[in-house]
Amino acid sequence: MSKKGKLTPSKIFLIAVTLFVVFCFILFLIVRHHTIAVLTPRGQIAQSEMNLMKFAAFLSLIVIIPVFGILFYIIFTFRESKKSKKYAPEYSNVLLELIWWAIPLGIITVLSIVTWNQTHKLDPFKPLSSNQTPVRIQAVAMNWKWLFIYPDYGIATVNQLTIPVNHPIDFSITSEGAMNSLWIPQLGGQIYAMAGMNTQLHLIASKPGIYRGGSANISGKGFAGMHFDVSAVDTQSFSQWANSMTSQPQALTKYTLRQLSLPSQNVSPFAFGTVENGLFDTIVNQYLPFQQDPDNGKTNTMNGMNMSSMEGM
Image (cartoon, rainbow, N blue to C red):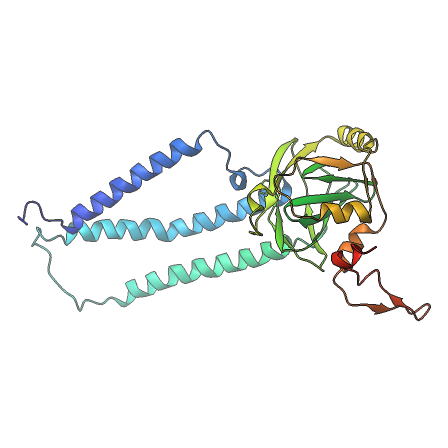
């Protein structure tokens, strides 16, 4: 290869920069008409998480910008065609070494402290402070759909969720079988749904709208369709919606729960007008071993009953 056509470090750098700019431009064209959920928070928790990401990105730029600047300087200063600079491979400067070790160490220290504090502040088990009445929702991950029970309203929905704006939403989350993860990106982070466990998540919507929710943990062939819309409405509209749901003819009982737990894909949203008491606890406790009832000395079979044993009822 002739010297004229040889790929020098400076040419490689220019090619890399050009490709990066082209990539960023194409990415901009793709996403400019699309909403990136994690970058458009609509709730208190999501906004705090967004602020933490911005803070971490800003601290990273303190290192990234100088490093790329130095890289550009080195490539053009010590390129092959320029012979004026003295070659000194053994050069050492204690002050410079202290600087480029101290700056990253300081950034990591600051970021660690801030992240630690924010992580505890945003603990998903920690209730949110608000002068509005919290709304309790019991979320159950199934194959491959979501069941939401409103225990204070006696209703339940499948693959649809309606919540009031500016009211804390207290989620109790479990799974009927495979592990999943409840995630509404514009309202907050995800929390796992596991069989036999009752995990907590507290979110709040600050603006009305329809937000995307789903599972963040792959759980089988129907995972892609395991999503739902979250309708955040004002308090009056939520009350009207809850009252209207009570007129739905279907009832959520142990029998209909067994039918609902059967694997199914791309389930259209629907609702139950009434809910049998204690169903969520039954789902959580279904895999527990048989226990002795301390009141009458008899074996308590309900808490230890799984779905296969219920089919014989």
